[in-house]
Length: 408
Image 1 (tube, rainbow, N blue to C red):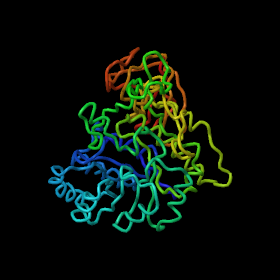
Image 2: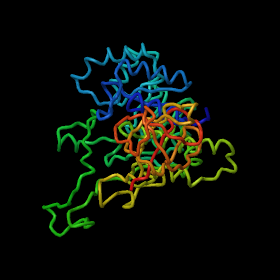
Image 3: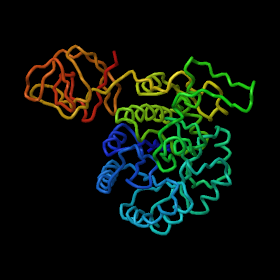
Image 4: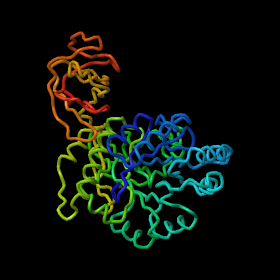
């Protein structure tokens, strides 16, 4: 592995596998309890065991999230959970709360402890204090510039690892500390159940201050003034590395397998290109083009280059930009007919122009001339979810190669 760890989200066992196959050095996943992503499928105990086995088989790492802010009634189950983590022996536990941190040290003493971004670490004294308490890694708050990160690195022990988000959705509140969802919907964002009301449509009025208006006239219906663009730092790989970050974290445990795979692969290519020849490193626009082919709210550099301005928000819509769909995954190869065996994910037709994205090679395009079902009958359309089809794609492709199609 290179000096920099590429850390990808794993909201399910399948996403975990795709992240590893498409280039992640490590993944982070949540169990069924104590994880700040209730919308993710998360992992049962059996899935966690299978996930850890898969990760170990590929000589990669897995970190388990336990980063809710627990109330008193939540603490009763913590010892059992931590003892299970001790037994499963993941490569780290990601924790926000000081009490949870203390209980992890007691009940899972051999598991390294990582401090979640939810703990809002924005200075070197906070990072050093966590280190003194036993943390192996601090996940920095999103509200930091390159210069601030460099200062934290210069003033903390060398063996304290620094992790930072480099890609994905941004929260309108300070490192995710938000009560808006709980207040408006009864769903507690600090327990992993955020309804994302920041993405809703608002008009701003302060009735006690007549004559003081905020210009929010993007359309006649209001504005999405709290709706941040997504973070994207693929253009700044050298700067990220030189700042002292040791793990590049990709957000997206509730995103699709396709999203996780493509984003992981893009950053994998960029990082590898840098380490291949740091002095002659050049940014390849194809990496950014790949990131435009996954769902996004347009991109921003967040706080890395300084405090965001008005350009960091999306004012006209809360919808994602989705220009491509995954239409299938390669699951095998028929050597007698030279056909790739594909599991369908979205409707696909004879005559469609598709893009094939192998885990460890560049994508290429192909126009479907003929398609068969699993019984070798020629078909014009594959409309059924997870239908098995056969297509000649010119060569045998690795299992789990992604096949995608541009939306009409």
